[in-house]
Each structure stands twice: as C-alpha cells, then as structure tokens.
Length: 190
Image (tube, rainbow, N blue to C red; front, side, top):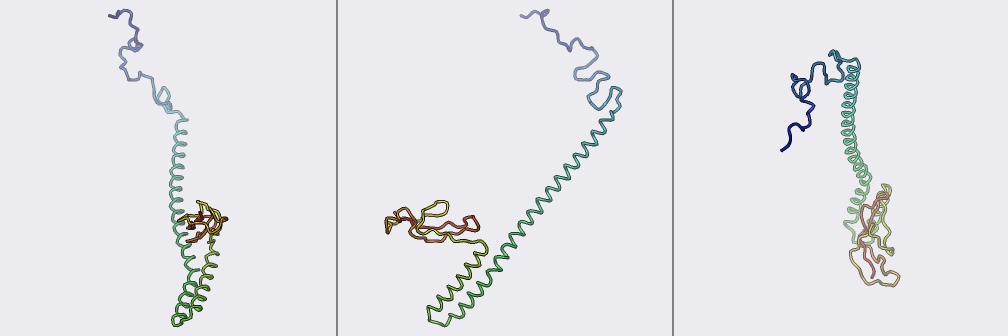
C-alpha cells in the first residue's frame, strides 16, 4: 500500500478554503475587454464596432454574390434561347426552299429536276451551317483516330495502301468550331 505521507500535494488543496473549484476569485475577470474595476476598455468598443462593420460587409458581399449567381444563370438561359432562335431564323429560308422544291417537283417525273432541286437546297444548307461554324470532317483514306472516328466494322482493304486506314465513311463527322460534335462512323481496311 502507498504511504499517505509521501503523496504529492495538490495545488488546489492549498488554495483559499472558501474558494469553490470552478469559480473565480474576487477581482478575476474572464472578459479581456474589462478592467479589474469592471469598466470596459475603450479598445473593446472600437473592436466590437469594427467586428460589426466587417460582419455587415461580409453579409452584404455574400448577398451580392448570390444575386450575381442568379443573374448570370438567368442570362445564360436567355443566351441559349436566343442562340437557338438565331439558328432557327437562318434555317427558315432553307425550309422555304424545301417547300418550294417539293411543290415544283410534285407533278414531274424528271428525276434530274428533283436531283437539281435537292442539290441546290443542300448547298444552301451547307453554306448556312458553315457560316455558323459547322465543318465536316475529312476522314476517307486517312488514319483512324479514336478521338475523331468511331469504327463500326472492318473489311478487307481494296489495296495495300488502305490497310489500317479508313476505307469508307458511313456517317459524316462534324466540328463546331474546334469541338467535335459528332464522331464520324467509319469502315476500316484490314
């Protein structure tokens, strides 16, 4: 058993016996802005005012940022709507030409006239889309690139120089600006 005379002394046991643990003794203050007499320091009121000002600026900035996000989101949706409207507006003449060609070739048996009408309309549509940034991919006879092409099948190459190359394009690929918007579906030569 431990000897009671050799136990270390607890500093709390030697303190004022009227003082209860956890309570502050008279004259002690936990508020750093208060003096021993209990009067607030002048620095404390200035610090509180600065804190209130910074908090107010923060709240205003947060509200302004939320308004900015809401406004830009609304502008973005509006931009998409107007971009579609602009594209539809430039495609309307092509749609009109299709209607006129359909009416003009309805009573003819001349396949050449129908073909000419389709060629004229296709050229007009291609020019209109090129003005909007659409570009067709040149794939036939080139090397296969998985970033640009989608191989749908392989066939025996008609010549040795087409082995491992694109033999045929089943569906044309397109760029809009520099971005691929549709991969070309191609046939590879073995």
